Length: 287
Image (tube, rainbow, N blue to C red):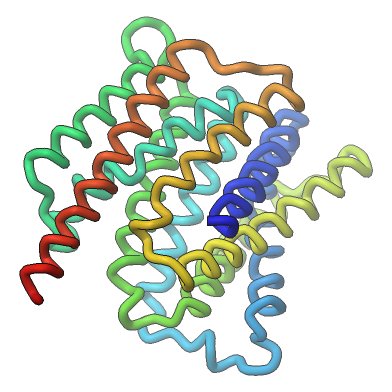
């Protein structure tokens, strides 16, 4: 639980710094490249790649690249969304990932959901509509970017589930950072800019560190506890996001955002509860 909470804290710092940088005029693509380049370096250092490079051996390099593209899309879309949306808004929409995974896991993984989980997924989608409020003047390009980031993350989670049986955790972390770093290199000369001040340079370094360390904490968490047991705790990141939005940008989420977030979180927690119950029934039947 502590590792998951630290992951949420590091990712909140990452998003806060990214929002500050893109609002100051720096390209979201260049900020994303910095994040992945630092992540790659830290993955090698923290996972011991200098001592044993074989831990990064990929069973399927094309699948590793495909999975990395989904994380790249999630990051760039999220950074673009932060230009116009509050931290709490992007976080609340992002919490719809478990709901989308529930909906897509059937056709993509063969993990079909029952009618109760489908109702929970529908309720979560209604929560997203409460936040974005399309048709009433609230839905904008930032909401669209946030939804694209959420969908990209959904495919990233599904691919991770599918590949985790054949790929090592170290390779999944390493290639998820290395591939975006390489793929973004062609656009770096056209998007890179000198940091306007020393603070901006420090924030770029912090983004790189938070990306790598946050993923390392996430790996540690799931290496010692089950996905189901840890599932409720990432939602606490909403607290960090609200606090960071207020302290750094003087922004507080409105009632619509908080109400929609509550619906999404409740739906996600019910899906987690239902999956836990079904797994328990399956284990008793096996015994």
